[in-house]
Amino acid sequence: MVAEAPAARPRVASFAMLTDLYELTMAYGYWREGLDRRRACFHLFFRKNPFGGGFALAAGLGPLIEALDSFRFSNDDLACLAELRGNDGQPLFEPAFLAYLGALRLECDIDAVPEGSVVFPFEPLVRVRGPLLQAQLLETLLLNQINFPTLVATKAARVCRAAGGDPVLEFGLRRAQGPDGGVTASRAAYVGGCVGTSNVAAGQRYGIPVRGTHAHSWVMAFATEREAFERYADAMPNNCIFLVDTYDTIEGVRNAIAVARRLRERGHELVGIRLDSGDLAALSKRARRMLDEAGFPQARIVASNELDEHVIRSLKDQGARIDVWGVGTKLATAWDQPALGGVYKLAAIETPSGRWRRMVKLSEQTAKISTPGILQVRRYERDGRLAADAIWDEELGIGSQPVLIDPLDHTRRYRIERGLEPGRDLLVPIYRGGERVYEPPALEGVRAFALEQLARLPEGVRRFLNPQIYPVGLEQRLFERKTQLILAARGFAAPDEHETPEAGG
Image (cartoon, rainbow, N blue to C red; front, side, top):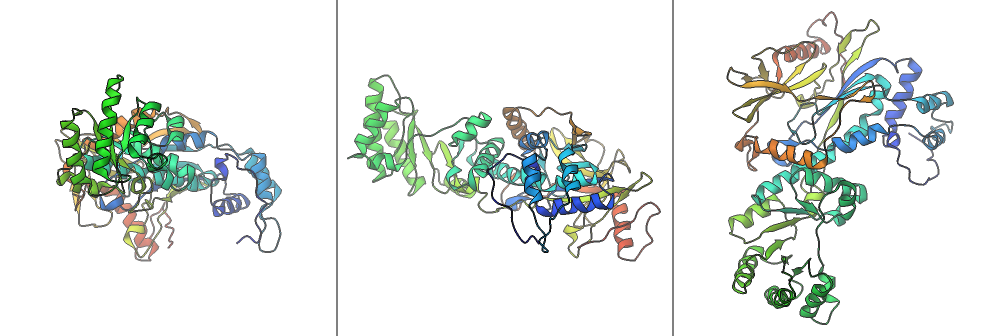
């Protein structure tokens, strides 16, 4: 506990300070105990697919790399930490430790799955090996930069799937969790398949196409709806999508058609209309007939109003004539699941003799028992489709036909048979010794890769209701090592000669 907070300072862009206090208190403890240079290995992973689905879409690596490239404790950061006090009113950190932080430069080896990869529970999305103090300090930053983007990208992939190829626009900034959350959500939604955003800041920062015309307030600011449409057409004849439901939707469509005729006379075309309330299925069908009969078959019908993948699927089933979907609140906030639940766990630590000691965290919940080792994920394919993933320990190795064991159900096993295409490892080097060795692709490339990955996912895994379980398991030798460590920690087996289990809650 801290008795008194320091005085507020102007906002600074310091990713080293984007952390929880306990990361710094542990770092201080490691430093005092002389453990700061002891090498350790941590993994970032999640335990359950979001939204009741069958997969997740990894996102956030690009911004994470930006944060890691500039990871430093500035003089202002150190001054802030120097003001922290403990319960006795004394400084929480001694000056020598703060000087240590000021001189700190990352030396870690960091591996990650490429952004846009389809991923599954218990697979490491990021692996960090390096000095214990440094690897510990990265925990909160990594989780912050990966958890939420992965959640929103996955939601966007589901929404775009429901739309069946129709364009989806992300409209969620005004309901997002602050400016950072809004920009992060816009970027992640684009990775997941959205074609644009209303968020101008995200467009500026990441080059995402921006879209938008007017709101109900524009219509209400004029004497009549017809006048509002005419004045907007005068101002922006090349950007006319009229919001038609301020007063009466069908009358709004008539007014839009009348103004569209004026636009055509001036050499411009009506882009479309937007429906934001009411029975979207029925209204879109009637509006489509009206537009077609008036000679505007190219005019698009955009729909918004609390949409998500389930509402879109229902509207599709009802035969709604909607061309573009504007999805806001339930996408940008990941409405039905506010957090991914990613965690960051110590899996191995180097002994004074230089050997890696595998670590396991115990729990009464099977899902919360960590997997020890220096982990990697190998993906197998069949006929261009993703077929199975093996989680394996780089020290133990992996054979040509491994047996995979489900982390939650040890009786569920899967053998990699001949006929599958040779596996490829998902974790790729990002940093070596703190130096970046990976050039992240441009956002368009990330998005294209994500769409390609989703297309190669088995159909059953992509479905919304009771999705097929994609085969993911621990390679048998890794499973046996983990089991031995668990039994030893619980007093039912002798520890391995080179392994000392670490039990926890």
